[in-house]
Length: 524
Image (tube, rainbow, N blue to C red; front, side, top):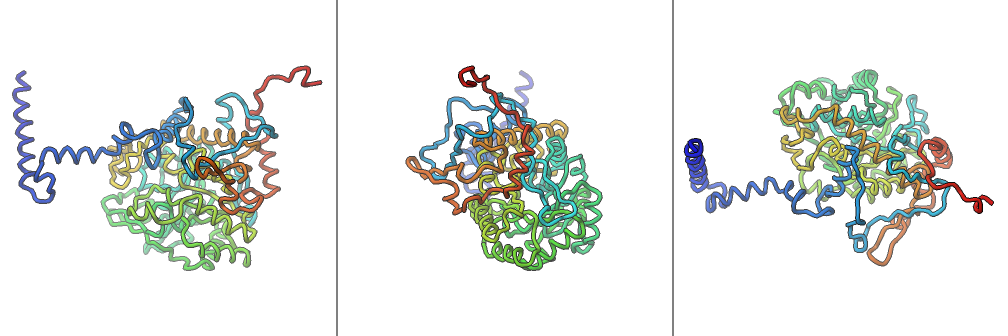
C-alpha cells in the first residue's frame, strides 16, 4: 500500500506533464487538441500490423503473406502438423486468376499414402547449370528450392548464419545478395555470389570492379555460380543507401568500404552499358572463374530481353541462367510507388521472358530461376509449369527462422533479430536452432512439390506442363495455363534428354505406392 501511495502520484504527474507538453507543442494538431486520445491513437497505429495479423484479419486477408500461409511456413519449419481442416477458406469460385492443378487418375507415378513420405527426398534440378556452354565448373544444382539473395547488412549476422547453416543441412544453395560474402556465409552452405552495382567484396579502394579480387574470393569459398544483379522486385532501377551509422567495421570489411561512412549502391553498372557489353562481361567472368554466370532482373521493358536473346542466338555468347524477380517480391526497403507499381508481377514477367527465349530456341539451354512469393507450394507449381527450373525463397526463409511479418525491416528495429544490425535484437536469434527450421521448411516445400508432381503423373515438378494447370476466370469458366500465357506445346519443359535424365535420377528417390496388394481376380 505504501508503494502504491508513492507510485500513483508519480505516474499521474508524468501523464499530466506529457499532456501539458502535447497541448503546448505545435507539430501535431491531434496531440494539441486531444493529448491523451492522440497518444493512444499513435500507439494503436504503431502496433497496427500485429493487431491485424493476430486479431482483426481473416485467415486469407493479410498481406504480403496471409495468416494461413504464415502458419503453413511456421508449422513446416517446426515439423509440426501443417495440414488444414474443414476445406479451403479461399473464395475459389469468385477469384479470377486462381490456379487449379489437375491430378491424373492413372499415370506412371503412384504417390505414397504416408503423410511424411518424401520429406527427405533429394530434388535436383532437371538441367545442368553451365552445361550447354561447357563452363569448367558446371553442375546440377542439388535442390530446386534455394535461398534468395539477402545481404549481410540488410539481415543480421545471426540470420545469415542460420540461413547458411540451413542451406548446408538442406543441401541447397544460398545467394549472398549484393552485400558481399561475409564470415556468416561460411558455415558450410554452398553459395551463389551476387555482383551488384557497387561490386561489394570485389572492388578496389576507389569502388571499381576488381577481377583479381573476385578470383581470390571465389577461390576461397564454396561459390558455385555468379549472379549479376540488374534489378530486383522490391526496387527495380533503384540503387541503395546504407547510412554511415549502420556501417560497422564488420560490414565495412565484408563490402570493402570505409566504416562509419554512407554506403551508396548506384542504380546502374559501370562495367557494361548495353546488352553487347553485358555479354562480353559475362563471358569474361565465366572464363576467369570457370563458374556459370547468370543475371537477375525484374521485368519491365521487353526490349532489353529481345536484344539480349537475339545477341545470344546470333553470337554464341550468353548467360547460363536467368533469375526473374516478380514485382510482388523482394525483401529490400523501397519507396511505396516502387514496391507497389514498378515491374511486372512474377507470372506475367516470367512468361514474357521465357517466351522471348523460346522464340529464339534458347529455352532448353538456359536455366530459369523464379523469385517472388514462390516459397508457397501452389505458386511454385505454377512457376515450374511456366518453365522455372529452380525457385528462390526470400521472405519465406525469413519467416522460417523467426520473422513475424512486423514490416519493420527498414527501421533497424526488427523484433525477432532477422532484419536488423541492433546487437541486442539480433542476439535473440539462435543460428543453431533456426538453421534446423530453415532446413525443415525447405525440405517440406520440396516434399510437397514432389507429392503434387506425382499427383500430376510425373516424377519431378519440372515435368509438370502448362496443360496440367487451369486458371479460373470466375465461377463458370477456366483456361489452360498454356492458353493464358500464349505458350506453344512443350514450352515450359526441359529438353527431351533432360526430361529422361531427371526421371531416371528420381527413380527410387521418392517413396512410391501405398495401395493394397491386387486380388486374385485382378491378377488373373
